[in-house]
Image 1 (cartoon, rainbow, N blue to C red):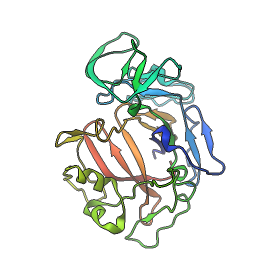
Image 2 (image 1 turned 90 degrees about the vertical axis):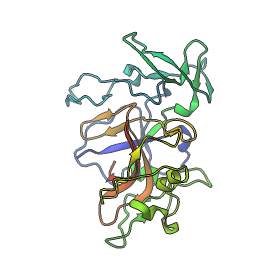
Image 3 (image 1 turned 180 degrees about the horizontal axis):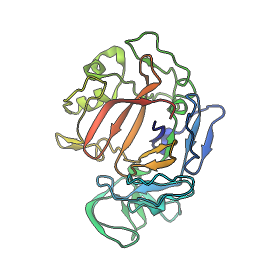
Image 4 (image 1 turned 135 degrees about the vertical axis):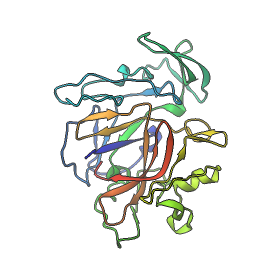
Amino acid sequence: MEISWFSAPEGFWCAKIKNIILTTQVPAAESSPSNTGTRSWNLGKYVLATPTTGVTCNSAPTPDSPNNDGYNSVRPGQSLSQCKNTVDVSDPAWKPTYESKGGTWTTPDGSGTVDTLVSVDPNTKTYDAHYLLGRWYQWNTATAGTGGTLVSPSTSEPVNAPSSICPKGWQLPSSEMNTKSLDPKYGQTFYKLFTNYGYKFDNTDGGGRIYGPNEQNGYNVATAPFYFTRSGIIVISIPVLRYMGYVSDSWTSTAQASSNNSYQLDINSAATYPSLYDHNSR
């Protein structure tokens, strides 16, 4: 079982929630994390330098994280600075902008170059603040402690957490499977967001996963108007931060009916899944 935390922009963190546990490194492995955990994780002020192109940042296994995988892994005690497409912008000399440019990214260790959209300029010490990596959250944290104990009222309908850590006047998107997401009773969904911009999802597998390519009708989910950042997921059972630069998963407020799953928006290097579900004990 993969148990994960998911990332949200830095500005997303604004909740008044009791007993938050904020950690600064990948957590120790847990075989059965609690659905009611309220933890968040912050590894520092980093920017994804190549937001439309994944760049490998694999690390060697450690005693606390012995799994030998090839999924762009960062392990306990390691820093995001080991990744070839992340830049530490915590120094006050770095200044935010909201502009990226096409160009050539040279990896910090000089091991290679990538022709791609580049969000940082080391010469001028500027970075595109759209691509700050922010923090990762358990689902019960993102729902301000209101989601972890939810029990769906039926076997066919989802249920939404009543609160979230969003700013006043904002909300976590809700979610459901397939075209039901267009029904007003399901609220504001990621599916509705993308279809409003002309995305066409197909190949529905009947399990709540509807997907289409990352780029449609001139839009790429990592660029305007979306600016989604592929910041990876934390898998507690290994433990490891995995898929940095390749995958992004954003929580919704919705728990799947009669299960321990919750819905999220999943973006990978090839497709966008606006209604993917998985274990909500992340």
